[in-house]
Image 1 (tube, helix red, strand yellow):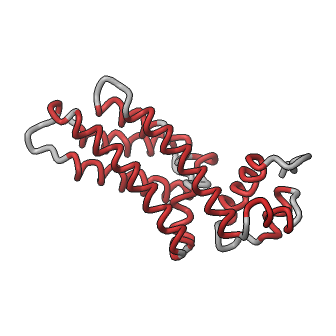
Image 2 (tube, helix red, strand yellow; image 1 turned 90 degrees about the horizontal axis):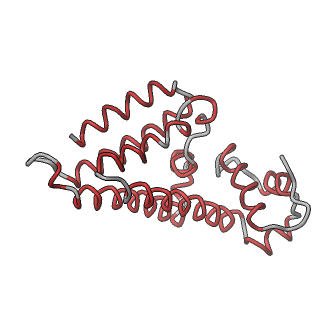
Length: 191
């Protein structure tokens, strides 16, 4: 792994994120993080705090990037179906093939057992709730385009379940065509 030449907090967080993402929260030691970032433990503690505090900063940045992208994509587009379809299909490279094999840091964290830690669980739950809220709000706003029995709340929750499931299955490096076929089925909910 590349080491920063001088202290760049963003670069250090990205390098540490990659270690946590690869090994999981539970299996990552501070020695792993110092080796990846090139920072000595005292510098790491001074900049970010202990392992938990460091991981929470990493998770917060990760979630913020995904939510910002989701807000842009879900709130854009001529229809809820197009906007949500665009958001979902954007995840195909991240939940298929070799690139997708690492899955989602947030989903991995929950599966790793780190979700048992109160603050980590709180952040992951907040992230999931925010994504579902974005979906639900867009579906409610465009409700007229759906049939009479359409339930935007249930559909938003189902889409989140599919998203989470695809990110869990990403560890198996499924073929992109298979992931797209799954998403095509999910988008039928928006008919």
